[in-house]
Image 1: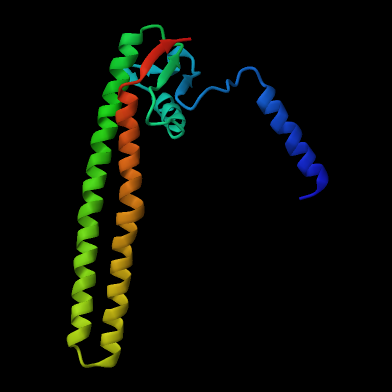
Image 2: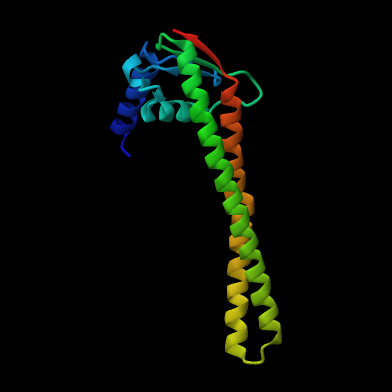
Length: 170
């Protein structure tokens, strides 16, 4: 990267940070800056609004109360629609976590089965193949346990925390 490119990026960063429409709030303030007709359609929260909330929710601190600002006039309807979507997301994440647990258990059992089979086999090539399969299965189990399942659990906790968010009008 040249010096001019770095200077241009620095200028763009200053423009972005000085833009008055972007609010530098704490992590627990979510501003839903969509027009009212793009927030709720047919008593359902739109995908665009839900994605905007989810993207902001990633940075929220789970120890503090979340405040959600919106232009939508009927706060009660917005809260009902938001709670319905949150319940749906929590159920989906719970099902995903359950599926990942089952898959991790199957991977561990298969890994142990291949390791045991390699111990009792006398053919060298088959023994090595069984050992390789067992290690692959055990590492896949470890990946599910240490990376995939905790990520799903964190997402679920964020939605549970969003459920108790305070909703205010701008």
